[in-house]
Length: 386
Length: 221
Image (cartoon, rainbow over all chains, first blue to last red; front, side, top):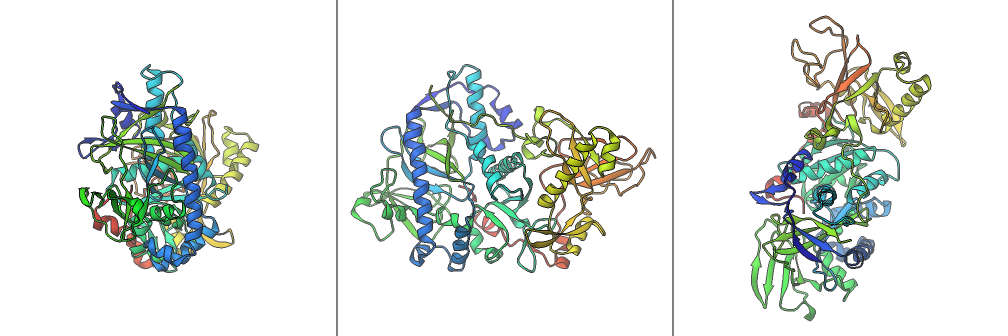
């Protein structure tokens, strides 16, 4: 793994505009950054990223199977009691999941260490699956990258395939929804809508607040048509607390991600994985606050079970807060042993590995000036050296 | 190879003038020709497809229609959207619903990459009516009441909607061919908010989305 500087494609902004990638610059800062690239060997990708992802996913699914029947685990995950039954049913029914993203600290030496699992509402999907892919194809064609360069990135193909099989191969009508006022969320949902359309599905988009509820609790769209399958880029833990949340229980609507994913999209997953697989090379020691063991050490990261985009995180070194981020999240805290976030000269590097329908599907690299990766991290494309 | 072998955004063509494609100026975003047939006989008469092809397209579209058309729990909620007499009962996977009738099919013309025809529905009552003196030719996506005359008196127009809520019209005096302009038929529901009918239909809205507003945090990660 190495970082190199590369000439930007002179026309990449025009290409981004044409493809609807409007959020390549966010809050005045560059988000898509192709002035550099990360090069990996095929061995690094296959042995250090892809294989561990498959293993971690299996560990996560085994954890869900255990947790759904254990009151103390569900409580530790801060899942409201009302939803336990619905989670149990969703898991036992085999509701399929679409996607998720593992975030790792990795520098090419030693195992990738899992920082967290964004299992419910991850973004950066279009940038990974399409824009990064186009970048590679064009840079090879223009001679900036050697012929035979590759990329860990079958995200797009796998998404289309996953949509095809979400209902066991039968056709269905898909609604997609997200919150208002986020270009990034809207872009992600619109991209998923393209994937679903490519899979032959009829689709419609609506905002979360446009979802209607009939007297019998049925969820309907803006023309009052029943919502059969809903992809929602909207966190389960938010839905739990909202007015329509309770109507999810016993609903005929199939949700994507399924409600059982709320057990994984949760920082409390980290101490549970460590409890179940202590010493696993891809895990960091993690505990609930107040239950620390010696292997946590004096340097650790403290995060609320439900924080997002690097909010409300404290980095503690030798008992003192060395860095922290603001944010709106509260609730139970977990502590994870601090790990060096590598810096190749362009900022702190976090590697995100995509799972699609529980299969490893691709990767992105983000760089951030801050050691706690936030929503201003830059996306730096990667390739596999021939 | 560890990457997708091909990415074809908007590969599904004419009906997918979605947001990505809608902003696109590339080859995938161009207008396409398609044919609208109200029934099998109209399809055969047009002589674009053979009799067998027409029958197969209609059979396939009817099946897709059952899977993809908006579903309603009562005839009245369906008719609120599609108009009186435009809905029919259907039993899908053991549950009874009302669906808008299939008003015709839209069949693409491109031989390369040709997809199965799509079922067309009656126009939505909430669809925007054409402004006086305008037709769908001059105001894409607007609704012309069935058989109303154009200002020039050349012929009538018939409007349809797609299962995604898009609008499409054809001139009934001309050939069955329509050009589907980019953005006319979108995957985005283009119908107006139906909150106006919410109280009468017993539908409440706004029960999701409040956390995003109150935290002003991103819902994604």
